[in-house]
Image 1: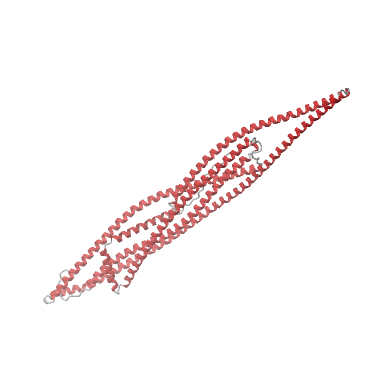
Image 2: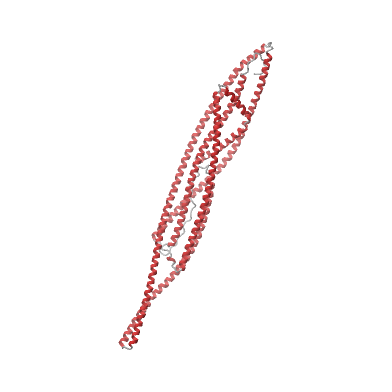
Length: 593
């Protein structure tokens, strides 16, 4: 129904323009002589008291024609204003697209710089001899579950955005079909306009021929009137022709009755014309009521659609705000875990230093004790077999202690070897992770380029659609940003889940995508406000256009009625001139009746 209403409004606008052109051409083509004759006839009628009602009708018609001309000029000025407003809206749209492109480029540069800094920090940490697995704290199971939930929410939003994009594409295809129909209607209107133009030219030519014919008849009658006066003057001196005078007198007595019959016929024709005009006015009132109903239905449909779109936009904004808050909390938790991990690493390093110091002190004390014992034995000399036996026991005890210390040091060496092996394996694993991270970065860069191209295409399509905003009241459809890329898989390390470094990377990616969705929602909101303003202006313009069409139709009807009345007035003036001739007492029958 809205499409039919839009098509009717376009046809009415085209009809208004065509009628304006035709009326202007008819005014230019009317000769000045007809205007002068009509002015003379109107002045003659104005002098007569019997035709006061007709004089009032002529004055009312002239005033309506002047007011309609003034309103047509006002409509043309309003059309020029609307064109200027449309040009300003296009300039604003181009400026906004340039700003969006600059912001996207700046965000890409910031993201690339941040990734380079993170990679350099990680490389420096590895070169200093740090463990890559301890570069960031490990997340908890609650964090991993929450992050998965956020990923699912993002996937759901991407699916909804894809569905909305499908709807937008359907709306664009429908707009293309309407555009094709508009071109067909315009071509058909041009053809009809040419036909109407030729018909009006024929009518004007016929009217000109009739005017010339009446003018020639009037001149002939004036010549015959002069001849009649000369003949009467000549007959005053010849009283011998009484029979001819009687016949001319009878003919002159019959002429008033004939003229009275013609006058009655003219009055009946005027009554018929007035009844036809009343019927036309009733038809115009019915058409006006129907158009008002159609405009009200269009307005209600537009308000419903705008309310639905506003509700959808508000829902998306609420979801984005919730996701932003959750991301902030997750980032704070990740920062807290990293701080705890750094504190634990510092404490572990201090404990290792204390343990090495204790081992060194123990070894030094054992060496000092053995030196003292050997020195005392050398000073005392041979003290007997008991002392030798005691020394042997001490040697055996020391050998046992030495054996125990060796067996205790062996697992420590083995743990050190295992630790070095694990470190080498972690280095290799980190190198593979860096390769995958590099591939993901390249893939993400390509995705950003694709999104930028999609945004540019969308801006071009919006520029094309904006040119038809004046004629399309129902082109407002729901549109969202292009579908963002799905988040990649996140690596697991052992049984602890994802690392904090990878969590931060995923949080940054999700934050950027959510910011992108928020920016798209803001642009759609601004586009919706602009569409509302344009629809309001189009609605006001359509109401003015309907009023101007009605007024121009009334003006055309008034012009046709005035042309008929002018022709009738000419005939009546000719009859009145014939009636005003003085009756001659003696006139010959020369065929002049």
